[in-house]
Each structure stands twice: as C-alpha cells, then as structure tokens.
Image (cartoon, rainbow, N blue to C red):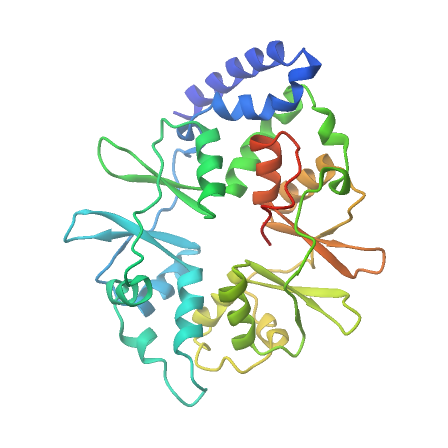
Length: 337
C-alpha cells in the first residue's frame, strides 16, 4: 500500500509541476495538491488505534488514553453497532471543570460515570453525528472538514466495512504536504510575512500567569475554546505554555482531585521532555513558520515581540487554511488559538 501511494504521489507531482509553470496559478498549487490526493494516501501501513465502547467507565477510558499514548479515541456504541463520537482530552477537561469542588471532595462523576452517561449529560439535546471522512475523499475535503467543523481529529472510516482506519489531524496533513513541497512551484505568498498575510490570532489572546490555579486554566479552555495558554510574567513575557495535552498528566499522575495547585507546579510533571516555548515573529515568512512547526512537531507557535511579550498565536489550523483554502489570504477573522 505504501509503495503504491508513493508512486501515485510522484506521478501527481509531475502533473502539478507542469500545471504550476504559470505563475498566476501558483497560489493555488497546494490546493491542487490536496485535491489530487486521497485520505487513503496518509493511512500508514501500521498504526495504533484505540477504540472505546460507550459502556466503559470514563476514568478507565482516560487512563487507557494515557497508557496507550494517544490523545483521542473513536467511540463505539454496541446498541447501534456504529461509531457515535470521539473521546478526547477536551472531555476530560470538561468533566473536571464541571464537577470539581475541592481537593477534599472526590469527583464522583469521573470515578463512576460510563462514557454513555457522560455524553447524555454533557450533550443533552445537542447530539451531533460523528464527523468522519471516507478514505477515498480528497485531502482538500479533509482540511475543509477539520476547519469548518472546528475539530482537530477526523476519523477515516471505510464505508464498506464501517471500520475506522486512522485518525487524521492537522499535523499529519501538513507533514505530508511538507514532504513534497520542495517539488512544487513556490507561490509568492510563501515569501511574505505573517503580518503581510494576516495569519494568526492577535486579539484577546488568552494567557495565564505562573500562579494561576489549574481549575482557572481549565475554565479558560472551556469558555474560550482554546487549546493552549501561554504562561506569562507580570510584563507579559512568555516563559512557558500550558496546553490541553498537559492536562492529561493529571490522569497519568492521578492528581486530578487537587485542581487548586498552580499551572507552574503542574508543569513540573510533564510526561515528555520540554524544550521550551516555540516562538515566532510577525516579520518572519510563512515558509519559515511552516518549517518550524513541522520540524518541532508542535500544534502552534507563540508570536512574540523582541522582548518575548506575547502578541499572538499561529496554529496549524491557521496555516492549513492559508495554504489550502485561501491561497495565502487574510485569515484574521477565522483564526483560532
């Protein structure tokens, strides 16, 4: 499968190169690339996929996410014999934020609820069907679906068997594009700066300080619907970052019953080595930003000034929207942190 995909990709690259010779059409070269490749091209020959039955206890599910090193899992409903949703770290955050009272009171809902109970309570009348995609759909459709639905994970489900083959993410798609980007004609907008292209979020940036309690940070995640919070000092200079992914460490350490501790203390328990906050400047080019994101394998860069004061956030979603959906156009109104 991998060899067939590679051959198909190279053949398509030749077609794209010939089309892209016309400079006027270069700005759409990445859009054409995405339209000419299928989601199937990104499915690895082997990968770990964890699936939860909705009758599983919520706590056991989150421990299983941690022990398997995954961030999300499709949910299978035995009654309907189909996939009904995804369980993600956002669910863990919502449960903690909704039911936490104090370090002295056990979170009953986390300890006892099944996934199906939590979904009934949390979703109530707002049940939405699972957003998924066929392996034969184009990557352009995948990017469009991720951005339009404001989701970070898109299950690739085989329509003939109903099996989930893979979970597509912004990171995986951008990495795939980056593999072949040097073979394509380079659009002019790749040499333009973030400021010129207006890519990213630069207003009402949600931040925390080193003494912010975890519970307050969880409230910001829930209310602002952001995926990371720069940790700043009294001058607004960034020194660390607290992301949704860091919250799962509370499950790994079984410390979720005390959310009064500070984010600084919580970040001492990171499960992975932390190299520091990945930053960028408004005057850097889009090409530089893409290279930094892909090489560092991060979901966002913090935009700072010369004094490291936070000025904005550039996410993978912003980048893919710029490259694929708007051809380097203005994204300021639809960016996400």
